Length: 165
Ligand SMILES: Nc1nc2[nH]cnc2c(=O)[nH]1
Picture 1 (spheres, protein in one colour):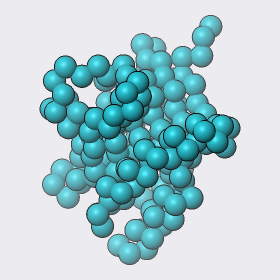
Picture 2: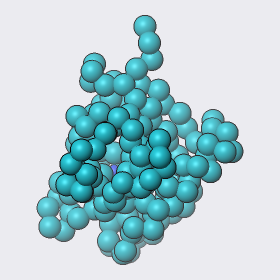
Picture 3: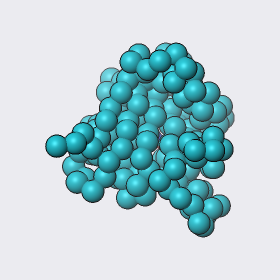
Picture 4: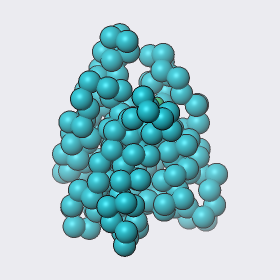
C-alpha cells in the first residue's frame, strides 16, 4: 500500500515551504479584478517558472472556472508541456469538475487557499465533493494536495465578494 494522494495543510509545512507557496498563491489572488475571486496560476515546480494563469470567466460560460481557464491556457500556450512538472495554485479548492480535469492532465500537485466547505458555508453554489475524495476515486492518479495557503486573506475576499453581490 502506498499513499497515492497525500494531503497536507498549510500549518503542517515548514516556514520555508509555506512562504514558497504563498508567493505563488499571491499571484493567483492578484489576478482577481473585481469579478468572481477565483484565480489560478500553474507553475513549473522544477524551474519555478509561471507557465500560465486563469481566472473565472463564468459570465461567458459557467464551465470557465479559474482552474479550467488556466489549464486551457497552458495547453494552448505550451503545446509540448510536461504536465508532470506542474503545480496548480488556486484561490478556491478545485470543484469536482476542475479536480477531474487536473487528474486527467496528471498535474501532480494542487495548492489551494479557501476550502469548498468554507465556500459552501458562505453561500456559494458548490458541488460538495472535496479534492481528496475526487482524487481518491481515480486509481491511476497520484499527487499531493496542499490546503489553506493564505486562506485568511482569501476567506475574507470570498466573504466580501458574496456580501457585495
Ligand atoms: N475552485 C473554484 N470553484 C468555483 N466555484 C465556482 N466557480 C469556481 C471557480 O472558478 N473555481
